[in-house]
Length: 277
Ligand SMILES: NC(=O)c1ccc[n+]([C@@H]2O[C@H](COP(=O)([O-])OP(=O)(O)OC[C@H]3O[C@@H](n4cnc5c(N)ncnc54)[C@H](OP(=O)(O)O)[C@@H]3O)[C@@H](O)[C@H]2O)c1
Image (cartoon, rainbow, N blue to C red):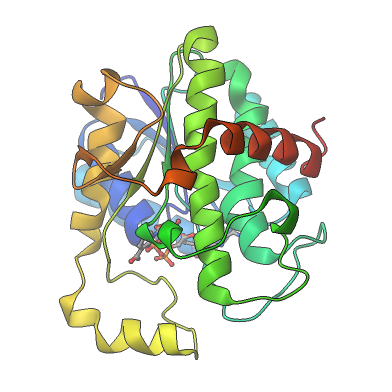
């Protein structure tokens, strides 16, 4: 990947950090879009010394805040470069309902609206790029209605997390439909598998406890990064657009995740919620 410019969100830990390490190992220049700069700088230094690639740069961004996403996009656009790959990877699971600075449920803001806004703002520099979104098999465990994205009238954490991960798949599909021909964008989503990362590890709830107990049975972050790297770099992933991948293969999704009307509706609604339309 010499000469390629890659953006990874959530590059300071877990799957994002391993994907960054692999991109760096392959010679790419990587822009590490991270909320926690101190952690990101330490990850950057570790990866640079391990791979011998020092073309890594940290860009601060809290994806839950539209103002922060806009500032980060401005910094990225200011580079006046074309991006080859955008990995929309950062994500959270929260056991309790909290609101983002813009008044949206926090998982919706961080896992879907922030990455959606970032992608839209970077579109002019994503001609011919691959945009890969980290989703989850958790997308299967939710009811999904465009009228109840914000979980204002009842919040069940696993369901809300699943809703944001279904939104990731729908977004990837609709981005492929809208921008595949127009800008040559290749857009896919993927499930990394159950990974022993920092994900939900601080959560006091049942889900967090299950993750801690089952940690030994989970995949390494390195294995978790594989499908993302595969979709971002392989020839196989260019044969189709807008798909959902698991273990380096196109995978089954529930019907809602393949519903073109829902995908278009979510895209339109996300344009409105992020203030773009
Ligand atoms: N681990 C699994 O089993 C699993 C399974 C399926 C899907 N996934 C998905 O994989 C992705 C990566 O998760 P992971 O497992 O690698 O977990 P992780 O180790 O907790 O990493 C999550 C990353 O997201 C970043 N992040 C969280 N909130 C952010 C915000 N508001 N703005 C910017 N960055 C933010 C974190 O940065 P900070 O250091 O600032 O917190 C961190 O770098 C997520 O989208 C998750 O939904 C994970």
